Length: 302
Image 1: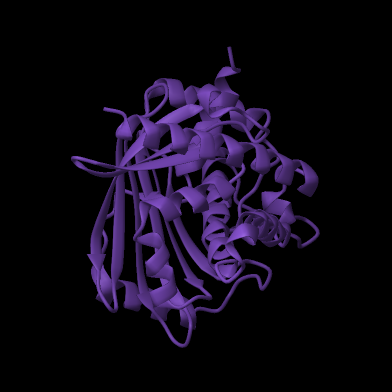
Image 2: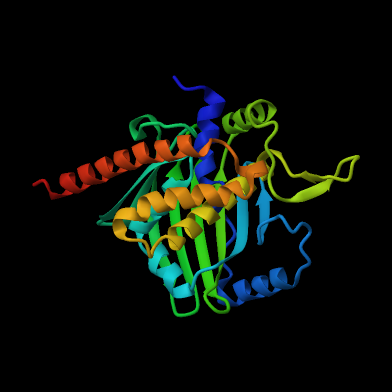
């Protein structure tokens, strides 16, 4: 049996970074937020160009992440409108072991398999099914919504949402958001994690300075939300950065690109050395192909 706190945190890491109870405000609201962030004075030049809103009290964990992606709106939406693309993007995260997708009668669905940062078979990980809905797919506004009912322990009501608008030449402004509800068991698991394995981990927001004038970064649940928000942002960027590679080279290009992007923020994002991460992802990719093929075969079987 897996350690209680480690198993839970490995699972929640999948959703922390993309989800939100807040409703999408539409293109006008997103443009207003882009203007506000673009004109704001950055606190720390080493921090990625994004803004994060988080909350983790009262049984609701939620976050909104706003960021500019260096790819055109057309290329971004051509990827994110497809459930199959999400199953190429999300497994770049070290805690996502596999992802499968299907066109069910009730609509498209994807299943994420969440586990530890080291290699883990999807059969030993947590499976999270999501309904996939393409809500808006216009020329200047895009919105996709994923919803799931139940997670491990006492977590439930998962929502994953992404909206985007074009901004300037070859850039898109994106809002990634999340929300899920949790109870006492989850609260206790987080408390144990942040007191032990997660005690030295921080996010990106500067919350003060130490006696030597060095930046002090947010920690705890808010820090975890920020770390995983950036991991997913970089997963989208790594995918888009490698779309022009020959198809046979894309997977290797993507895992290498994701790792190099995270290394720019080693203080917050380091977990594994490059060789271990690459080897884990190669094995997990083989597992994912096996799962997807088995699913396709089951659908075709009379």
